[in-house]
Every structure is written in C-alpha cells, then in structure tokens.
Image 1 (cartoon, helix red, strand yellow):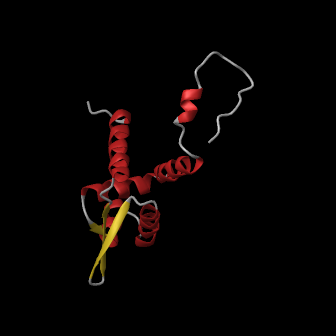
Image 2: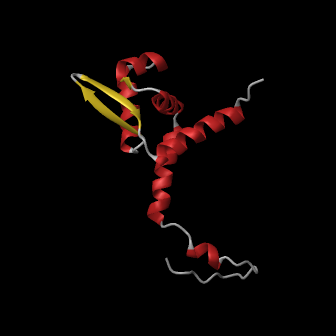
Image 3: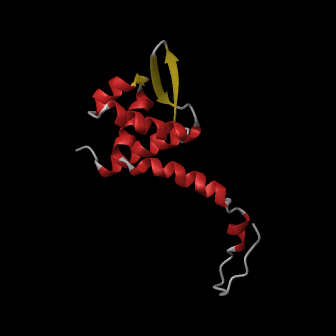
Length: 120
C-alpha cells in the first residue's frame, strides 16, 4: 500500500504506522471473525465446543434451541474456521478448531464475560 499524502500535517509520525498497516483483505478476515460475536447463541455454542466435543442433538439440548437452529450456527462457525467436525457412523461431532484464531476468540469471550459479570 502506497503512503498517502495527508492534507494536514499535525506533527505526528504517522508514516511509521502506514508501513505496518495490514491489507484490506487482512482487515476483512478480522471483520469476518468478529461477525461471529454478533449472536449470543453462536457464542454459547462456540464456547461449549471449546470445552467438549458434541453432536447437534446434544448441543441443541444444552442451549435449548432446535437442531436446525444449532446446525445453522455450526455452519457459520465452521465456515469461519472456528470449529471442525468428524463423522462417526451416522453421527457428526463438533469441537473448536485447534487454531490460534479459535483459541484467541475463546479467551476473548471468557475475558469479556469475566469483565461484564464479575463474581462477587
């Protein structure tokens, strides 16, 4: 990315920031991951899958949602690369992906819940 000519000089050394600025595509990747945080049910399902491997029917029971609704969230989480699945016979089991991205999101969710709902 070329360094823009800024219309106003405020005496800041902004040039150094532009040298290390991620690309538009990299920002889009981050935005796509943050979209996963836009739904409380999806966050709950992801959080559960960070702690266990489970099938759709059991997840549905755990979060008190229909299986189709849980499947919808699982598709989105899988497309974002945050969960993985494995088939065993007719059953499909889901768990959090073993990636830095998934681990960071899990940690962030736990920290945000801790900050918003401190234990007494």
